[in-house]
Structure formats: structure tokens, C-alpha cells
Length: 204
Image (tube, rainbow, N blue to C red; front, side, top):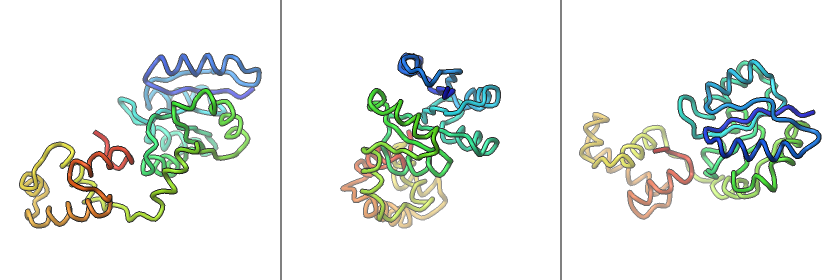
């Protein structure tokens, strides 16, 4: 039997997963958790074969939980289940130690097959996600400072306000904004924020 732990802050999603797994003769749902901290505790107690992990959760994010679990149990097999296909987010999750990345919209079709594949030692990324990664594979990434500026733009700050918060000149901020627009191929500040959110570079 493949023993599964489901981690998601939405009970409806966990119920859907439970129903799906309940129809299979070779797997069982042994525990559930509603945030990253609970996930780490549940993993310690239950030692599941495969963990299904949401990314956007209160208290502790899925990525932090993956890092914590894999730090303690390097053999842990974790599949990310999320609504976000952003390439930066995917890369971050895989670097943290995830073995699979599935979009919640494709659960019915791909979840059971992915659980079996990951349990068998394979890595699996859904086709939509793979396309997103390939599309941006050669992009120049934003620097840490540029990501910080993009977050401040997303929070509604003007160049002047950003300059004050970062203790830099307004000219420097204009230069950062120019680089951000070029690297993200964005038309303006709002477009840059939209792209940043979609790709998982920043979160609101």
C-alpha cells in the first residue's frame, strides 16, 4: 500500500483527494494537514510514502514545509499540488526537494498516476508546467534588489517612496524599474506586477 499524506488549507480539496484515493486498492490516505507546520508534524508521526503539498498556506508555506521535511527526512517523496503554474515558483519547489508538480485543475486525470510514479522513484511535472518552465528557461532572472523593488511596486509605492524605503536615489529606482520591465518583457509597472505574480516571482 502507498501511504499518502494530504496537505491543503481547503477542506474541500482534501475531501476530493480522499475520495479519489479511496477508490484505489493500492493506496490509502493516512493523514491530513491544513498548513505547513501541521504537515511537518504529521510527517514525523506517520512517515508517509508520498506527501501531497499545497504551496499557498497560512502559518508556514508549502515550500518551507518541503524544505523542513526534506531536511529531516531526505528520502521523503513530495508532490506539489497548486493552482500556480509560474515557472519561478515551480523551480523553487523542485529545488526545495519536490518530486512532482501538479496543477489542481488536472487532479482527476493525473494525480493517481503521479503518486505511483513518484512512489516508484520518478519525477513528474504536468505538461502545462513543463511548457511554462521551457518558455522562460533562457530568461535573465531578476536580481534580489529588483525583486524587492517589484514587491514595493506591487504594494502601490511610487518611485519616490521606494527610494526612501530602500535608502537609494530616485534615479537608482528608475534604473531598477527599467531593468525589471526589460527582463520581464513588460509594457509598464502594472504589467510587470501581473507577470511577476503569474510566474511566482512575487506573492501578494
